[in-house]
Image (tube, rainbow, N blue to C red; front, side, top):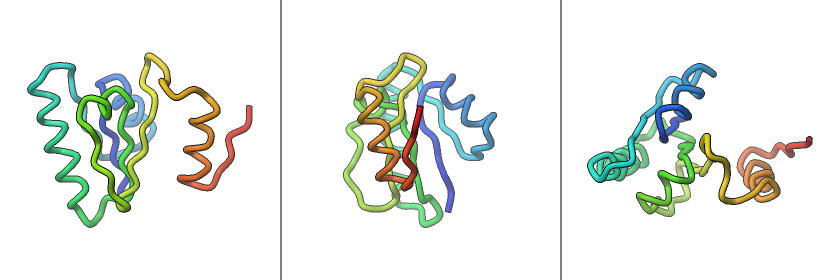
Length: 102
């Protein structure tokens, strides 16, 4: 199963450097928002995608569909998280079963 990352170009570049093979960068304009909506729906329909990581900002713009599979996780971008540290730890714990400690 593949891990796919969707977000701004800086976040996507970081994950590419970390070894994620399938990444998609989107800007802030309306055309990119529409492209992102189409891309997430396409990824949801693919059988080989297990996890979609999407930046919180992008997820807010495209209204991420609620699905049971693949797992869709919202992650912070370079501006930080809108959820806060404790909620992010809980999301990671539920998603992958690992508790983050400082």
